[in-house]
Image 1 (cartoon, rainbow, N blue to C red):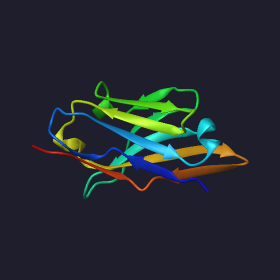
Image 2 (cartoon, helix red, strand yellow):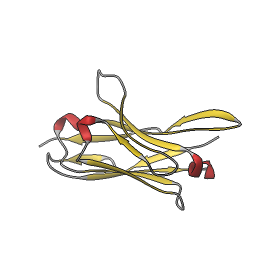
Image 3 (cartoon, rainbow, N blue to C red):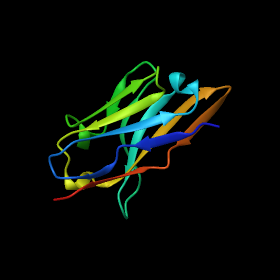
Length: 118
């Protein structure tokens, strides 16, 4: 079993920045694709950004140029640097791990709240 623990959420003013972290409890992290998703109240969970095991990245259009996903395989940690935050970025942000090793796996973190408000 893999545990994903997110941190770094909080309250920030519009235009501000936050850096989310997600630490994995297992070295399977190194061969896994990692992603950040978010869910705002009353809305479905949506993809924010992903990063493959080799470092290729993909972003939702609404965060391109503002958010950056990165990973540190030595620390089994994935990051989401969020700049120029907007009130519409307010949501619970979830970390996701997926891959295949004998079987397909998919794990989620517990989520961290990000609130953008003046």
